[in-house]
Image (cartoon, rainbow, N blue to C red; front, side, top):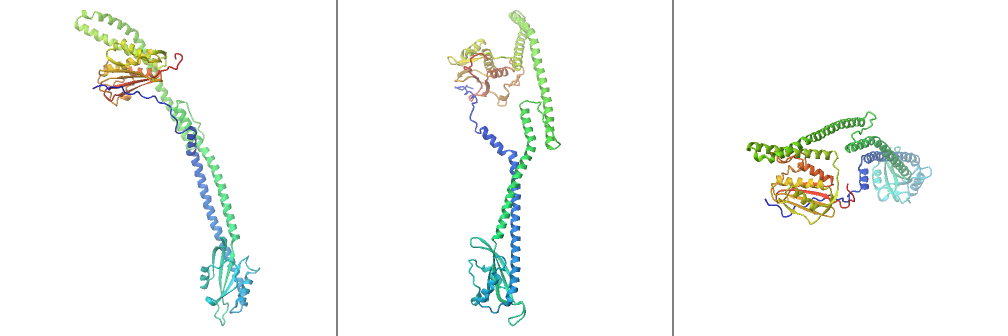
Length: 511
């Protein structure tokens, strides 16, 4: 495969961007969408609907009962006065006599301030008492009364004023020449009663019910707030405790009060927190013991390995004078000793990084010169294609930068295919180093694990020159500088490792 003409673009450092949801808006949204507002709205809605239903039912019942009472009273009063005055009326009555009867029925002895109309006969020859009011008897009521039935009707007139109309057909009390008892006499009396007083009473009742509904809604809101506080305080405490636990405060516990479901939830949280704390402490202890063991073993092996390496170096000089089998065995021992020495050194370095005992000693250097020196020191200068600027001033730890470059280039030379290209460039704030090979690339499933310790992408090569710690050490050194290493596959084939470090030119003194 051929390598791409231009290296893969460097990963962009994440830059701060304006928050689409400002903190004040987020707090307002949480306050509106929280459980407390929903509880208050639910309580107030239930109370308001209950008060509204009560007011409507009360208004209808009061209006109906008042109308029935007024109608019955007016009808009884009208019949009583007709029974008193009608026998003295000559039949058939003339216009003046009807006016006199209507006047008597509408006088001060009448029911409140009703107005009475007396009518005799039907059709064109009917006689009616004089009626000067603007309110007329409803035609439907006249039709019903005309059939010989007493009736009443409620209607509005004169600017939406409520009225009650009562119609009573007068019958003969005793048998006589005009007809038997109970026969319609042809005389009909209508009484119109204004209902402004009853309407005012009903409106006052409705206003009182509405005021009571508002008071009930306010009380419901107060009770809802009180209830929400009692319910949500433990929930909020649980949320704060869970947040503290997520931040690593494993000793966080809740105060348990009462014996309800929230108290049971608090007990469950405390039990979970205790179990989690114990498990994490055990894991930390095991991890600390493992690191300490690796560091102790590495330090203990360092001295005998140094002696073994010195002996094998001396023996390598005389290997040509030894028998072939002995010389081959000697070279194998020498190579394994060298490999074990590198592994021990890597273990010591990774243990120092884990313990935070690896300080960063930044200096002002030229990154292009540092890359050349790293490759020249290891004899790789002729095996790598370089794309370096004339000069790239940076401020970083030269020893750790050397470790990063050596690991990335060495990994490409061991596991990729030539040509291997090293490109260096910089922006105002960042330094970008790209190492690209022309191999088969990295399987996508292996990419997330490349920087894990002791991880080898090629499982078939259980015995290899590398220790499986090189990329992990390079990543840790990049993080010490505030940077990162990313791995990907080049579109033209091969693996691409990109180092992104801050140039650190604004730092005045070594870290």
